[in-house]
Image (cartoon, rainbow over all chains, first blue to last red; front, side, top):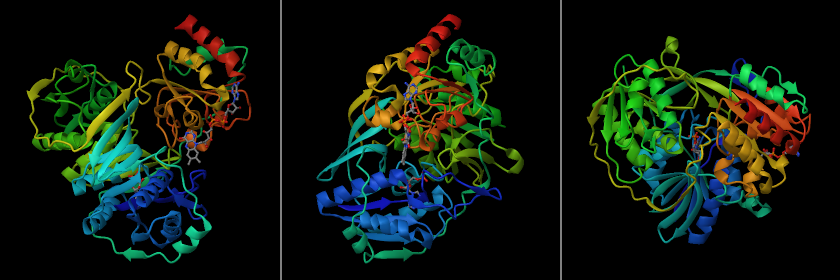
Length: 243
Length: 311
Ligand SMILES: Cc1cc2nc3c(=O)[nH]c(=O)nc-3n(C[C@H](O)[C@H](O)[C@H](O)COP(=O)(O)OP(=O)(O)OC[C@H]3O[C@@H](n4cnc5c(N)ncnc54)[C@H](O)[C@@H]3O)c2cc1C
Ligand SMILES: Nc1ncnc2c1ncn2[C@@H]1O[C@H](COP(=O)(O)O)[C@@H](O)[C@H]1O
């Protein structure tokens, strides 16, 4: 199987996002593979092993994303492609991924359910539409039998077991696999695995961030005595007016 | 400017979230408000919230996102719609970007407010897992939005929608559904006005009776923190937070949840937050509107009782 795993390079999810001059100031933060993408990567490595296939990791980003890409190589991807561009919006990123996919004909394109920076949950749907492929999101289990995949996907209030032939796009989430931590050998070999840098294809600018806003902190938590829950009911009814 | 809204139905009625999408569309339309709806969705409610025309299509079986996208794109073209609106749902979240590609549209997901027209077509949406918001300008002539719950106030327009039958061509999907497990009759987390969530502080699945009782009293959906679903105390689809469901109800009640940043990511756009935790230093209190420090096992039954006496 030829598998493509698309990863986004995002600030560590434990971090508070600092803002400076009305913009996120990400300079001092640690960057990681987005959590959902990390789940997808872990499963992709297992499926590559199972099918003795080839796993390519793709990231649309500038040179600062390379440590994150190397980490994916250390976890087990065979080679990497970096599309050298700022990932300005989902349409831009999807256009780049679709272009790479057209050139390489992957059996499977795995992504996360959503990135954890701009959280659009859009790239997989766009890539699928651009390539005319079926798409499963969120995919919580993915097994292969020849070229037929069996997946669990979450639906509103439950789950569904579905079957479909390759090729397809899937946006993954736990519990599809356990996150993998690179071992020493992985880290060493990652340094010499091929990482190809390609130029982006041109696209029109579809969306543009105009400004940011940090949510107002909840003004002040009103504390209610544990012995007086009636007061909570009263406040919810007459002050917050939510019941 | 014509607006098109995609309607999802449930028990032969439009889903409540779809009616919110209608209200949103009606509030911004300068031309016709058109709904594209499966034929089993009763249309009176649609007119009530502002739909002028319903394009009714017949479905056999469940639609895949690719099929929804194809139906909606064809309807948008037929009606010269400039704005296409989806209510956030698992299926719609996937269909919306596909429609964006078909129509060459700008797409925004997780939209939480009415657009700002003073700067073009600018919408507000959550980023960094709810840690911030951004205003995004949608540049293309056609815009596709998926809106979050509570993005707009529900105003009745009292129209009667004209019904037209619509027969888009829909390609078969290569996806075969083998098995569906879905709890019916329960209020869906994303649809609920009130959500009651429990965390590891509840000690075990056997203690969820009181949470369910409280939820039932409030007509609420039940949620949980991630470790709770990881340990299988509760099903995965109840898990709220950055890696789970993001909710924006009127009232979110967190019981025995510490308030880790990843949990808060899923609840920060709730209107009112109540936290019940035995540790006065639990970080969740900093993100709450009302708090009680105390033992959930003592407080929850009393709270439910007091609610029963009032509601
Ligand atoms: C990448 C990543 C993604 C994550 N995504 C999510 C996510 O989407 N959602 C999520 O929830 N978590 C997520 N987490 C986990 C998160 O960091 C926390 O570990 C988790 O939210 C803690 O769950 P909890 O509050 O139920 O448990 P705990 O942190 O153990 O808190 C239990 C709380 O219960 C209180 N308590 C104990 N007994 C009682 C009692 N008798 N009465 C009242 N209170 C009591 C305690 O004081 C404590 O505050 C994620 C973590 C990572 C690293
Ligand atoms: N810059 C990027 N490069 C490669 N893949 C990406 C990038 N951004 C997003 N993705 C993939 O698309 C998925 C959905 O992202 P999003 O639409 O931003 O929520 C992510 O989980 C990634 O797998």
